[in-house]
Structure formats: C-alpha cells, structure tokens
Image (tube, rainbow, N blue to C red):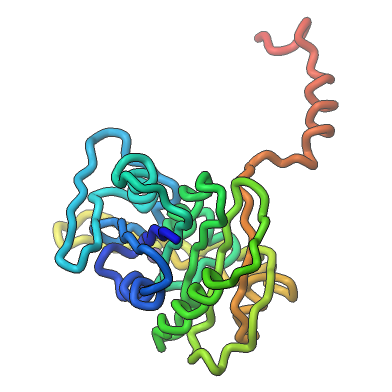
Length: 256
Ligand code: MN
C-alpha cells in the first residue's frame, strides 16, 4: 500500500508527524504538505504562479501552496508511482459539521477522491491534551482493516477523534454531519500603524448536534466517522426547480 500523507496545518505540524510515526511500516509513506499553516484554505488551488516543492531532511516534502495544491501535485506528476490512499491530518482541531466547507484538511482528502479508494481526513477534537497518538492509532486501524469498504465514487471519510487516551475511547460511531450555529462576530482591532483590522470570529456552537451527528458522537467519547460525498447538486430540488423554471415566460418577461 502506497499512502500519501498531507494536511493543512503545515509540514512541521505535530499532528502530521504523529500520523507519519503511527503509520510507519504499514506501507510506503510519502508526505507532501503546505510549508505553513493553511487552515481554512478549503479547496483553493494556486493558479497564478508556479509552485515550489522542497524536500526536508526527514524526507517530508513541502509546497509553497495550499493543501489541495499539495495533493494535486503529488498525484499528478510529482511521483512516478501512483498512490493507493490519501490520509490528511491529523488536524489540530475538530472538523465537525459545517467546518468541512472551510477545512483544508478535508480538502486535501477530497483532492484524493479520484484515486478510487476512500481518502481519509482525520482531526483531533482538541481539548488541550493533544492525544495525536490516539488519532494516529485510529487511522492505522482503519487502514489495516482487511474488509473492503465500498463508499461509491467521489467519497471520502471524515474522521474526528476525541482527545482521549486510547483506552478511554467509547468506540466508533458512523455519523452524519451536524450543523453549527452562525459564527461569532468579526473582532475589530487597531493595528500598530493605526489602521482598522478584523479577526474572523470563532465558529458557532453545534446547533444541529443531536444523536446521529458527528458533534454528538465525539461528545460521548466516540470516534466519529462520516462518509462525505462530493456532489453539490441538490438532487431532491431538481423536479421542483424544473417546474418553477418551466413557468418562466420568455415571451414577455425579462425586459425593462
Ligand atoms: Mn488545520
């Protein structure tokens, strides 16, 4: 098994190092990660300049670009041999519910979805104990599992691991993504040169976070595993929208 590791926290992130250490011996590992923290980069690709890849003394490669750039390069030309899996993480913080829209961790995994095997995004639901070792062991267990998983095309697994010692995990729960309440307001501040600046406010609390959701599972000490499908069409809305569009009158409407 040839596994590509990436993340959005950057090539020096302890979560990435823990993931690498935890998966050693499982297969051939290659690490391609951003040269700095790109949390919140979502699926951004760098299209306005060429990218530089650097190899570090520990064998990891860094790219002066986004998480998606890293995986895109790695599977489209940086290596002669193809990968079987992509694992992205271990992110320093949770990626629950709406977080995944913004997440560079999840984006790196979704960029690997074309490989035909489930890519995995893994995040630590950090409460200050930094049990990356637990999250790495979860990933290893998933990758070692011999029973094939058929998720369907364009799908990944979004895994969130409670920040607990392995022995204290409650188990695994398959979940759906919950939803967060609206984010807190932007935080204004004045920079040392007297200009007005703003920090993006904190993410909202779990709003839709009841039983069955990823929020609920990690709160109960379970590893949350959500199958995520990259298909933004709202299929249930197609027929209603068709009827609505059929009612548009091209003969008389749309002119001032
Ligand atoms: Mn991150």
